[in-house]
Image 1 (tube, chains in turn red, orange):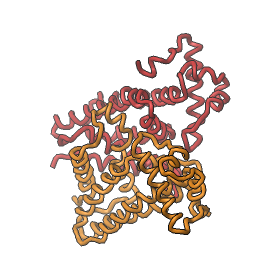
Image 2 (tube, chains in turn yellow, blue):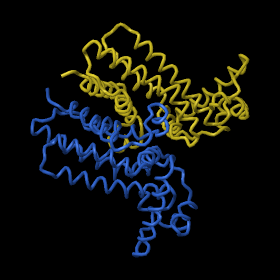
Image 3 (spheres, chains in turn yellow, green):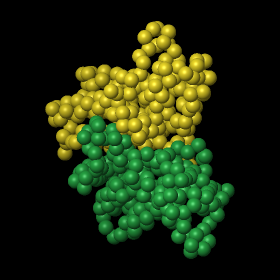
Image 4 (cartoon, chains in turn cyan, green):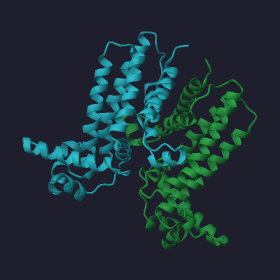
Length: 213
Length: 213
C-alpha cells in the first residue's frame, strides 16, 4: 500500500479547496525561505485553516510536501509531454526541455531542495512514489526525444539513464546552495540574463553530447 | 568571526586524537545510513567518548559535520591539486579529475547529502565556510586545467562557473537519491562496472563540451 493510497482522498469541493489552500500556504512559505523547514502551525496560520487538517488530508508533513511536489511537477511534466508531441526537430525539443527544467527551478525555488529531501527520506515509500510520478515519467519523455533524434540520424545513441542524471544534475546543481553560489561566485539571484546564459550553456553541452560525429 | 574561529582548537595530542575519534565515529555512522540524521548520543556511543566533547571541540553538530566535510574534502582537494601540477595533457587531467570526483562520492557515501545540507544551512556562516575551503579551491583548480587547455589550443574558452555547476552537478546527481535510483532505474549499489561506465559518460560529455571545433 503506497503512502498516497493511505491518505484520505478529499471528496467534496470544499475538501479539495481546503487541501489546495494548505498546499498553496506551504508553497508560499517555502518560496520565501532558504530551507525546507516548515511547521504544521506555520502552514495552518498562513492558510487560515486548522493544523489538524494537514494530518487529515495528507497523513503527515512529508505527505503534504510530497503532494506539493506532485502539484508543481505535474504542471511541468504536462508541458514536457506536450513538447514531446510537437512536430519540431529533436534538437529544438532538447533546447525547450532544458529551458523548461531551469525555469521550473526558478518558478518553484524550493522544488529541488524538497525533491532532494524526499528522495533521501528514510521511509522508502516516499522516494518510491516520487520516482513513480516524477522521475520515471521525466526519463520516459526524455527517452522519446532521444529515440526520435536517433531515428532521424540527428543524435547518436547514448544511455538514457546517464543522460537523465547528467543533464538534470547540471540544471539542478546551479539552483542548489544559493548562499554558496553568492559567496563563491557572486551570483545571488538568478537574473533573467544569467538564467538565459546558463540555459544556453547546458543546451550547448547537451547537444554536443548527442551530436553524431 | 567565522564558525571555525569560534571553536576551541584542540591543543594537545590527546585533544587532537579525541576530536579525530569523534569525526571517525560520525563518518562510520553516516556511511551506514541513507540520511544524515545523527545524534550527539550516537556519535558519543560509537566513539566511546563523552557527548559533551562534541560541543567542546566543534561548537555544535553542524560544526562537527562541517569538520567532517573538511576532513574528507581536504584529502580530495590535495589529490586534485597534485593532478593539476602534473605534466600530462589537459584532457587527461579532466578525465582524472572527473574520475576522482565520482570515486570520492563512492568513498564517502554521505558526502554529497552532507554538502547539500550544509550549503542550505540557515546559518550563513556554514555555507560561507564550505565555499571557502571547498567550492572556491575546487573551482580554482578546475580553472587552471581549463586555462592550460585553452593556452595549448586543446580547449575552447568557456565560463568556469558554469563548467563547475554542470560537471559537478552531473557527478553529484548520480549519487543523490539512492532509493529513487534503485526504484526508477534498477541501479542499487554503484558497482565498479557502473561507476566506470558513468565516469566514461561524464568524461565524454565534458571533453565534447571543451573541444574546439
